[in-house]
Image 1 (cartoon, one colour):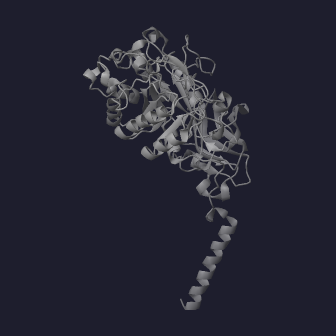
Image 2 (cartoon, helix red, strand yellow):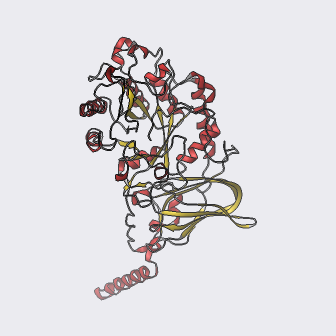
Image 3 (cartoon, one colour):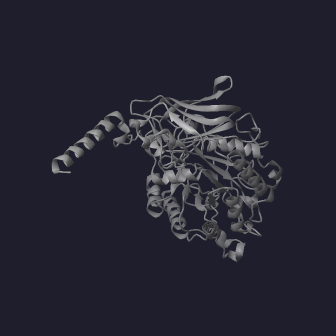
Length: 515
């Protein structure tokens, strides 16, 4: 072929390529959507992916029978006889938890590590003749089992003589530095809201009050965590990374935005309704953590051995926390011997088996999926992205489309009763309202009408047989981005209280008092 002939062939190929891109815009490099509002940091994304982790309330209160110690307790009272942190962590790992947070110091000021800044610690207790370091044993156990380690350091200290004075802040920060430099990587630092009141205070035995908004100079404390543990998230009523959910009963709001006007909140200063639901117009990404105990109390009390939460109650909490765009922080308190009691361990294993049964087979994985709109007609954002098993990919619509649907189509009628859906949160939380429908033998049937999705939303639906299932985003702040859609058929395990979180038969004052 001569030169002119080659040029003619190349021209024809070019014209065909241009025509194809006009007729099929998906061949163009469709740009990704812009971020919508505040978005999560990498540490926040890694934290939320854990989903379930445990609280371990174990300290002086375990031995005094209190929930809040007064501060004047004798270190000689702290004497676990068979402490085994590996037993804690192995139990939690077997139950599917990904990390654990230990109460290194509670409100009474007793330290589970041999702090250089106080004698009110394990170094003056009978445990290992004063040579013990429970934080060290805890950290070593987490590392050995591949579990994430978190630490709780109460801002209130009813033992310290300087509490309420400027000198205490330096003491508190020195202890924080000890914990964050001596024990390895920390995934979460827990700052609660119990601040000021009656206490021993070095023998003063008086009531001290502080301004919770100014006394602690929280930004200065947060800087220490950022410097020493840059991968750790910090919890309090207003974060700065993770917010309290507004209750200790075990549920997030059915509407739950991962956003909050952070400047309006501080540790111990809480608008419970706002914390429970988040704020659609929030200035910061601040997802919720649901902290709740497996027992009525936060610390172990033998009288509560018969009151450990049932499997249906724990499932209720799971669906009302992880299932509502939050994390689940379940407290499992070791007993006076220093071990998780058998009844709690058994219940955790039963809970793990129940969860495995709830989500044993994703029925949508092998189904066909279609969408009413696909961004730029591009396969990069096509409907199949929601069932590809990769939450880093997502279905997206064109920028001007805020109402769109996904339809899962089965080869034959299929029985299901659970729906799991996730937004692609690295670009923000968008969905305001969505609907779930099923095509049954009697036609289309509405199964649920809900509000927010966020990182993860799981719905317990009536058991139906359907040929198709449709999820419709009815309202969104920007074009919806859905990264995952799954369907399951769970066994018939009744909710303990009609779908809400059931209260335990007895109640005690909160051990953490994030008020």
